[in-house]
Image 1 (cartoon, rainbow, N blue to C red):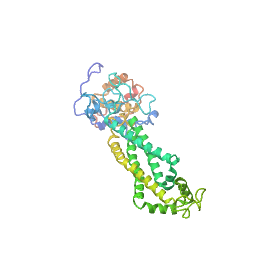
Image 2 (cartoon, rainbow, N blue to C red):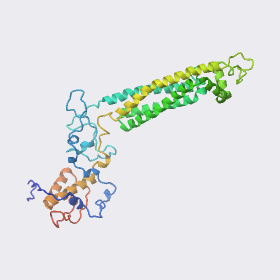
Image 3 (cartoon, helix red, strand yellow):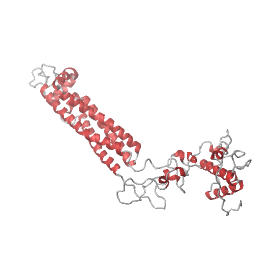
Length: 402
């Protein structure tokens, strides 16, 4: 075969030598191909050296998946793509990282093939549904948190009675509202950033918020429905104590439970000859009204909460029509060491198929075109494997001829 640079190479004839022999010829059995170069010890070659574009479907190599349903009538619109991702395996697509890049090695965000600027990313119907659901969720959780804080700060009339007589329900409601506000903020972060990890956590926390939401509703409903008067009697006698009774007496303007002589706390307005009525009737009436309003509000939010949970489960993974950031995983991005492995493997195959002289010339021409003279090299074994078609032929590292 002529060694002229302009002469076309004669196509090889099947069967080729096995790829295993080519890979085995890269290095001896107990030799690490990167041990000879101190600069390459700390950087492992990319995992993509073992992948070929032919292993991927035509959809992945020709622009990625299309929209499931086109709402504007454009039949061949390709989804906007951010980053290299699976398209990095297309022909003429760079997978080499840029200088100084850490998380976005070799990724371009502002232009695409053909020099045209990428169109603005539009929200799909899943994202809009999630957006509306989170607005509703944010609205009632924030309202509930404000209401609980107003009770804790004793802003509303008779709020101190709730802090004394319904402290457990108030604490659980405050926790539910606080967790709901935090979950809604996490949802906004996931929606606006298209972050599926945030949205997955958001969908999980919605269930916990639901549990905290229905708990005070169940407690207040059970307390009001089943023997409220008996529970108030036990609470006044055993749980409130002197300070709690005094606070209820001051709020309701009463003295003692039945009269000033029965379980009363002495104050400036409550004493033995006081004309104030007992606290049982007004206290039971207030508790009956407060508890009814409490569980009514809570149970009215349950359908909305369940709907938001369903929306989160169905839509959190579809905020965009592509999955993830669309970037090649870092372990599969090419670096100079990976290119050294690929080029040397390529040269080894050429040597097996065409001979050492032709392989040397082709590789030298490739290095000059790709400007890979500074690329690290991988040492070969002293001889090709026994299965090589050229018995006893020796092929020195062409990378060392740069």
